[in-house]
Image 1 (tube, each protein chain N blue to C red):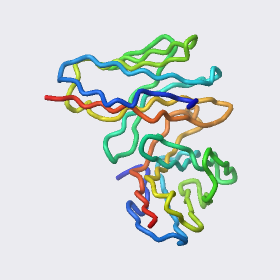
Image 2: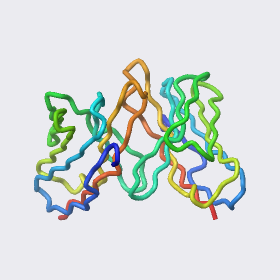
Image 3: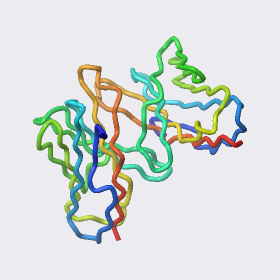
Image 4: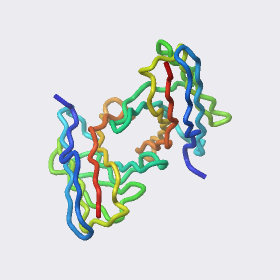
Length: 110
Length: 114
């Protein structure tokens, strides 16, 4: 079983749609959680951290469910510029490393 | 100017050749990482360094070595390249003062081993 699992997609949605991505992680001791965005052939960039209470940044909402070991990312009012691969990332401080999911590909269509 | 730079950006080489990929950063971060990315597998950690005297193996270190020449420089070597090392390689940095969680990536090096 992979440490961090994501639905690879692709998700093809029309502009203005709401889309949700899910991610599960296997290590219950994980302490830090993030969503990164990666454009085609570019480097990953931090989109947002994920906090236990859930957090929102504009059109993006991230949630964490520790009991189910599940992270989600909701994108409202999708824009063409949201087209990218979204990476779920989990950290374990004692291991001093981050573990990356393989990513979910999103294409927003005009 | 980019905060994390990688050279070369693209490299084609032959099996058995020695290759060095270089990473430099101007962010003043103490932690540096090397990852490789393959289609469908996501980013996998090769080596990481938390300061100049601290080098650690990651998930897939076999066939690779690293050198932390200074706080700002971290190089990755393939002593004898093989075709399954064809991948996109990323260097990343983070700051221990911020908990070290957010990582900043370089633009990547696309390596092809024939």
